[in-house]
Image 1: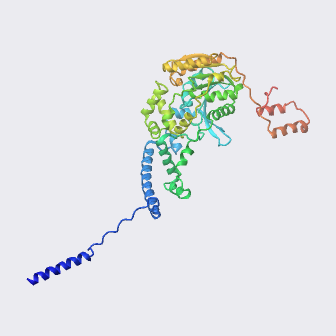
Image 2: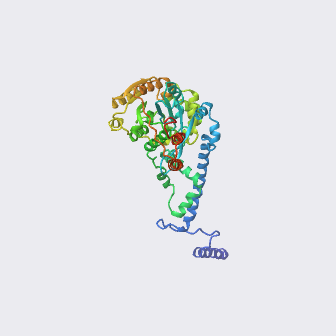
Length: 472
């Protein structure tokens, strides 16, 4: 009986000993987590977090750039090869180009000169009708009116304003930008494409600021005074071709530039015809071509662009004509130029105030307006007629671009108006006599010393186009 009691007592002592001195566990216990100090984060983790952020950012921007570049290349073909673009034009456009010429003009003293395309038909000693197209169209739109006017005995001249047709663009800033979030993404993509993917990271390291905030400010620059610049272009074309005085015909949105030219050069203008011209409304919806991807998609699709032209400009426009306009807008940055021109229109121009000005009060005026487009447009014509009550007003059966569907009717109205006015007197400025010709005359007067009766000075003068002819 003693053994069990001793073993039980020894077991009790072991249990008591284990309770007093517990054995260490087989696995070490995890250390107690230290409380995190939110107000003083560990500075050593910042580089790793920044690296992770820029890693995700780089991957995201790379995917976005790849997507946008793929879509852009799909919707906007490469037009860098201007020769290939020109040779791909349809035959009627090439024929139109062959009848015209390029004139070098200076848009601004701060910009290099540009070339402006001009086409003319008719006798050069006749009354000159100068045609200025509106937004979205060009001298090609007057291809039917030019021979019609010439056959009626007047000299017809049409010009491609800068950025339209075959003329160079003025390089206006902010031409293709679209506002909003999508426009901001497009700007970021354009900046990445221009400067490289890691440009933003380098700028952040150098300056400590996000560089994309500068993009919106830089891209919001508004086009310069397009009316004054376009007016100077019109003046240089008229002066270089010695056309003055002219009978000016302004179509659609060309109202502003045309009136600007008249105000600056009233002695060079014999009359003004307003052809569906309104400061508040342009027929061609240039804004839609400024929408990223949408504008490229419309210019890529023949059917979509033709439908747009018939909806907004001329309901009976031929497929070949719509295709010509589409191709001209696709080449030579035509899309960007027409978007910039649309943004630069002066919608606050008051025609009534201009009519009361000193330059316009004695100017013969005519208004030709569509009576078949819409009731709203007919009401707009009535308002224009009331604003310039002294003008001759007449309706026509065409659309907003009547030179497309009513060319004969419009030409007849213009010629009737022009021929009802007194005949113009064209004054040509005499060129200064060249220095070597002056020396020749001085030698003949002082050194020759005799007269054979040949009339040398008169003959030399006439040979250089400076005299009155061989018969004195």
